[in-house]
Image (cartoon, rainbow over all chains, first blue to last red; front, side, top):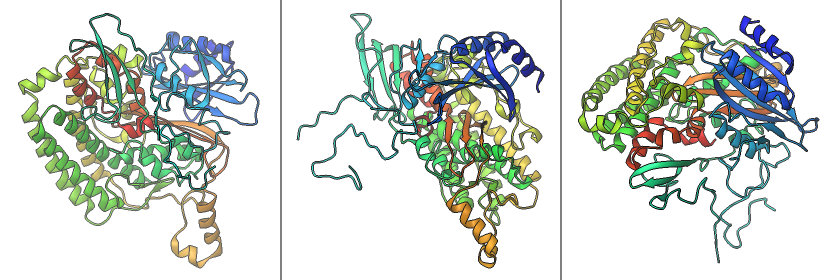
Length: 164
Length: 405
């Protein structure tokens, strides 16, 4: 394992439950409550200055259902870290990283609308790729792909092929 | 019929901060917005005080659709992310799947992918600069660059069969090898491209009007750029040589000789110049790659992902079953996840894929540079003139396909 990864693993040991290297990326598993602290340490101590991505994976049928996935990149070490936390469907809440990284603003909005993950502390979780009033979270596995929610109503008498 | 269509967007602000300012809406369908984007801006006279940038008008459920197709069948969707340099998307996606499968592509495919990535980068930068210049009224420069871009599109159509969305990448290699005479024509185009790029340099580099509109407009500091997730030419224009091709080399980039051009202070002029210089470097790389290109197959001999030879499909039952299983079930990608990032023309293009071991992905997530850049666009727009939105926005090169997915 890369020596910097080793140091991160030691420093973050109390906060993360698992740490392993996969395909050149350090993968950390943490409890939802520990994410903000872990990200703060990564940024301040290990110079992971770029927050590249946040998304979620819907493991429908498992408990906890969602896995929120963050990716960090260090422009100094040229290394990547992936941080993961499982949250339940009943309480899909993690802390926002907007206090650490500006880029978190937009990406958390996308993750919120697509999966319904709530980023505690991010006041602006308006839809960004979807629109105001969109019902449900389309990237959840139980959201049907064919479901339509047109903002502009169809013409009278028009029937969706194979529709409701 | 009474149709009241609700506003799809809730602006971040609807009241002005002062009583002598005004809020205007620009876009999403305005000739000057350079893409389907909506900007809500508070103005003091012609000075922009704050902006609220909205994207998403081209959202088409890319990630949802990917989960309903086999790993191979979604390649045409990947093409439609950044449609100015579709091949880079293809190769980044295939690289991600190959990483998960543990497939190493053949040397010829590796060098060809590198060559075509750089060729696409030239086409992408040409499009970006041409459009940005045209919006400032430089029609001649636009026509020069679009001429070359069209040569490139036609040339790529000879190879792939399509001008814009190529579907040329395959998991495990490429769709087909180069046609006869393709490299000869490539050399001709590169000579013409050098000539036309020189003319554009001559037209605008020291042009008073151009400098006035571009210099010290839309300034971004390095710290700001990193904090807001900027990558690619925009980050480099702030003066740091951050390039995934150098920092985390993939494909054949470790073997190539090239420089990473950087700007001085991250304004519009620097972004223009960094892109112009990057095209020179790309052409330099293409020349090297043409000499390095080895002979051999363009796909790996791995029946988990590559279709068997057509003749065998007709001749023997095993190959027929193999073909059938690959088409109907899709390549069986081992369970796991990986994140692979390539340096696309706009910055870091990352694919985060999750497999459960099936022929259909559990999740395909794209980390699109344009989307992240839109999140920080207000840092470049606020404080400048209303008219500066157009060149600044042009220099960001927002591509709706990858931004809205």
